[in-house]
Image (cartoon, rainbow, N blue to C red; front, side, top):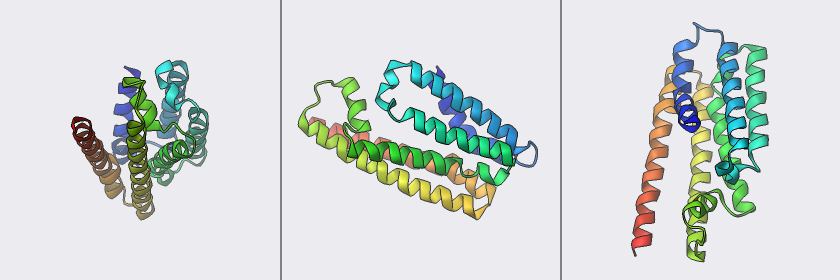
Length: 184
């Protein structure tokens, strides 16, 4: 249930920023972000099913918390636009580091379903991890572009809709390919 609530709030973030800038001080949005980060950190660190991400959780939490504290201190609405950039950076580093220090994030997820993953499965999960690394790099770069542009409507459209559609397309595409590979 906590994961679902966090996912919904994460997806809603661009819309919250869009509708609240100019109405609510940015520091209050950042305080909510701090509460979400803290809650997510506590839930992740106490849940064994999240162990696949455990080596990365403390530094990601520290980075996101620092960002929120900077927004609170500066009370800058413009700074709020950089949150998706930071999240993509964290995911890029997390997935990229797992390529350097296996098992990859995708392999860890796959082993939850199939603990005896064959070498071909390990090779496949490595390729999928590379695809996600490229996605997070490109998505983060576009998110940075929308933040630098400073148009909150464009930023909200991309980070609140287009980015999630692209992520969903990658996920569904990979799922389709995986089913073909397994069926072959």
